[in-house]
Image (cartoon, rainbow, N blue to C red; front, side, top):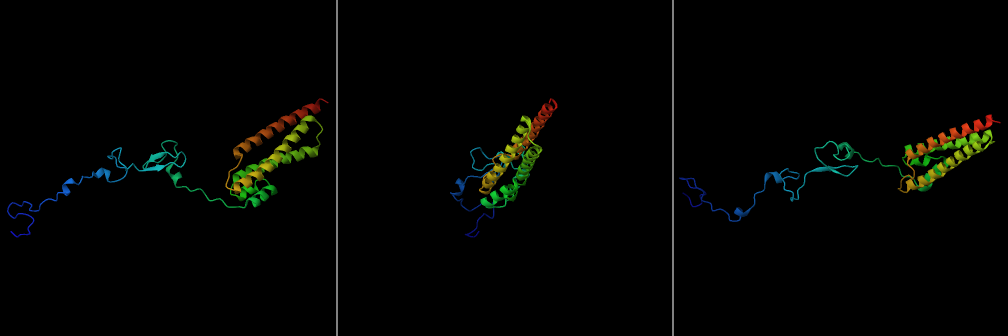
Length: 203
């Protein structure tokens, strides 16, 4: 047997002395070698893999298709907010003063601009029609005043919001609220018109 042999040729016993430092090396469990392992202890720094919900910011298992809290699909995490066009605040206000809603449209808020444009056309247009027909009674004057104030309010609001949006802010009044205002104005106009007809027939 040679002096540099590492094992015995007769009994096959190892002739290499064990390294004393190797005996103290802790064994690492295979289950804790990767983050998110099921066998990881609660105090382990490695945590289970998750995806954050873009709606409620809740943590969901990586294999979940929808958020366990609010039901938002995983695909929503991959959607990026479209970059809105940048318009100078003065230009945005100028477009809104030209016609309510144009400033919103130039800033990439087409739906908000449409809501303000429709409300302005209906309210101010109906006010012009009532005024041209002649305001001869109290109900007719009330209808004319209501429509005129609504149209002017939308006109001013649109310019203020366009300036706010151009500076990185948000709309002051949601479009859904404006639609309900439109429904309310139409409803009140019908009531006032009915009162005017009734008062005219009694004369």
